[in-house]
Image (tube, rainbow, N blue to C red; front, side):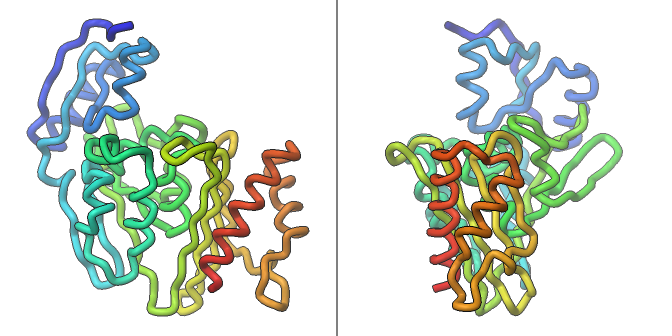
Length: 272
């Protein structure tokens, strides 16, 4: 199939992009890498009247280096992150995960902001940014607001953007010197979407002991404090972890085993 007819506009600023969203009252869609939106257009699952290209907006491709965090513009590509264009110092997990997202051709065009906005439960960026405690910077007609990544994704393919709002950037805190992040996904073959994702952050200097179970039916399962899932030996308590999966609606036996395996591998990486 081919897309339904649409007009194409290249926005020069965030203000122009949000104005177009407001004026078209839901009939416009923002487009950057189009790795998710493109197939939806071809299948006519999305039929916008106007596509607004935002790749030329300088604020959306910026990378701001701060002492305790890095702010990544929404249109920064996964390939740029894989190639370590971000300042290092506690952000190695971003490049490591980026290198295993889909294929290089997809990474060359796909953007971190586009992936987060698409909110696919099996998307790597969604789970990783949630476990790192990232913050989404949202721009709209009345100004900017910030919300945690875990609150930005409200369900499968659903985000917290208002009708005329857009994701401007993502602020990712740096890990401390003793901080460790583990990430593991279960796939049928390399490059495919995950069947299960486990992400663990152990950063005692900042008091963070977080875990995320991704590729769930809806939004990621975020465990703000996972210390009760650890045995006195420091190993993951698989019985307690299995119980936690069940509490969060992951009850299918095979699905639960896959997600437990991903969580365990991620925990072992972070605890090493």
